[in-house]
Amino acid sequence: MNRVLIGIRGEPTPEGMERILKALKRLEGVAEVQATGPAQVLVAYDPQSLTVMDLIRIIREEGFLAGML
Image (tube, rainbow, N blue to C red; front, side, top):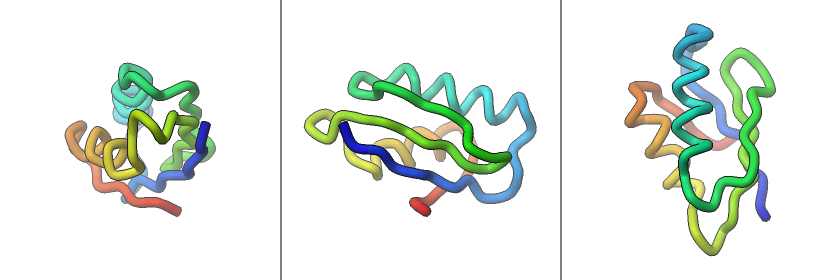
């Protein structure tokens, strides 16, 4: 498993952060997702199944800009 810290531009509302966490948890290959701050998520994922860009793309699909920290 790899781990990556992803920053989300701006500060999502609690509801927005919950949407992001749920969307990431639904991905096959994601083992763990946790909010580490108001605009950060730590994701443990299988690099054989997903890339960091896949994770960022899911966050963008939820309406937020994101990037690796």
